[in-house]
Length: 88
Image (cartoon, rainbow, N blue to C red; front, side):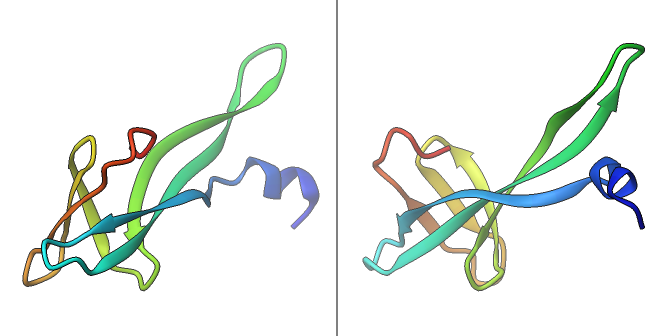
């Protein structure tokens, strides 16, 4: 695969992380993953960000309910909260 082809291929990239807490006080590091893909028009190619995915560092899915309010998607479902206003 050449460099041009690899640049045009969509890719997931971890762009940040934050801590969220279960009601019992246990902390979970949540990673913010973004899909990047090339967008072409007549003049140029540029990179476009797509879907944002939230996971824990151990690979568990996370659903965003609202700003600062999250839920682990596995069983049992665990609610997590974060008080940091910069978290998604």
